[in-house]
Image (cartoon, rainbow, N blue to C red):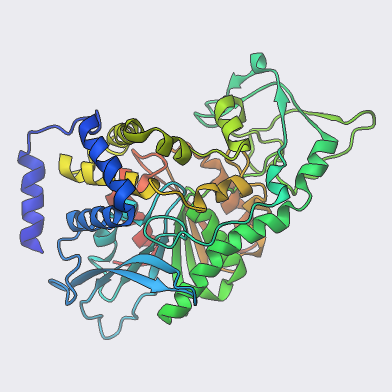
Length: 457
């Protein structure tokens, strides 16, 4: 492994070819688009394997190399043959005779992602901790995991809450968060809110169970009793939901810029008071994510984006309808946003990531729309985790965000405050020079903070 490390270091030092920001040529994108129509799963598997080999030269070697092993697993989780795709990375070196083998760490990705986005974290997490094992899973409907069953469309999914405000009064509260803008006042209709929240709790629990029950079945199939669980964004939300439902299976929680934490007017738990006259409720917004008057991103949201959300149209639908042009636009986005810290070692590595992401999205899945059922168009949870975390029974939790995260890191600070108030151990941290994908933007710093929390070497 030392020889591999030297080669990587030399490449970084002496490579003078800059990685372009323009994405892939349209001709290449047309070829990939045609390939996805013929065999999306084969193409995705190929790109996943290439991506893993960039970070772990020992990937796919069944006996391992120099004490490390990384393999792809597909675990069947029911009688219908549905499977969960995963990567298992192990440090095979002997534990100190006095040491205790660490619990497996299971990593769950976010929405619009897959396990491959963690490729720069795997080796760094296990390399110094003998006996350690990391699993990264594709959630149901994502990546190479099964894309069935379809999610039943229920009447409640057609209910939306409309919040009104005067855009001329919106001010920037950058001293609280760089993305926070608030109007003087906002209003919503009390009767519409009461109708909106009917049946939502049952729908939300139904959607959550699709993901968290599959994780339980995966653990059962692997004969794993207890884990440390790490989840990013949507995966962080589902990690909390899993720990709430199956507390006996989780030791520590690592919540990486988790979604669905903050309270808001969209929360079904919002104790909205009926006005004395009429049905219009007028309120002054709050900058505190623990307050139901917290509007979050609403004042800066695109009306088109919100309309698409309400009409059950996702960005993935638009990508597929756009043909090769959509493919090229996606690669342009990945080339410009995913390599801001120059953490990719070569053009080929970044190209592989962009094609991996494209083939993740090129085939429709029920998971494209599940977030539309449990989150509002402003990407806040209808059943916020701040109203549920008092029931968490995990030993410890780490809430970690990027320095330039578009997610409100004050949500994590508020969660830690509430948990410590309940007598639970919770920590808040920030990874420098990184955004929402902090594990990819600054992988070394991210890995160090996670290992410190897990008490790994």
